Amino acid sequence: MVTEDGPVIREVPLIRDQVYQVLLTKLINGDLTPGDKITERVTAQELGISTTPVKEALRRLENEGFVRSMPRRGIVVGENALTSFEQVITVRAWLEGLAARLCAARVATGDVTDVAALTEPLALMKDPILRPVDEIVEINASFHDAVRELSGNRVIVQFIGTLLGVDAAVRKRALADPDELQRGNAEHIDIGDAILDGDRDRAEALMRGHVLRSGDHTLHAGPDHGTPS
Image (cartoon, rainbow, N blue to C red; front, side):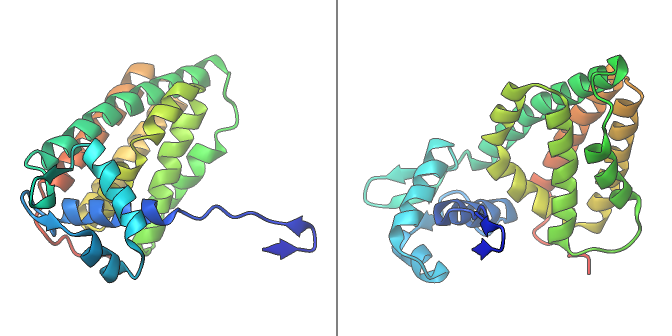
């Protein structure tokens, strides 16, 4: 795309990453269960793409323990797929908790004074207007992004970045549930208040508990939450 000011590059998710997200969402939603076969050709036809990005997405899923290659059967959903999700959520919970702690510490010491990136999504969460799920997911993600960025720890940002594929799939399913959306917003507001108060211990405990509770609820919920309109 070219504007009057010159060329503009817009980041577009790679096709393999989109395929990865589609398959992860099917796993979380229960559309794919342990032992189910995933055929590259069929998946490619369903998505209207070549088999190359499907192969790349499946290779990533296999490396992360969600699927495995079996002789004479091909790629199947692993028996421990749910355990893999739980492990990712546990690691993310501790990293996000540490990010919240560091963020609160920097607020308390005055190292962080511009907290608009944090307060703006919180204000939207307090707004009772019903929003499309994709918009809700974006607001939710922006809050977590702000906490990580304001923590000032680039290692945490990078490590959590490797988990965001799973996180995005879990978050979208969770926030499609109106009750979970309400609980999540209330927890975010409490976390935000703790950070803005500079309460390190409370911020860390609330964030860790939020990620663990929300992840557990999502992975063990029924097949259909319902979607807010």
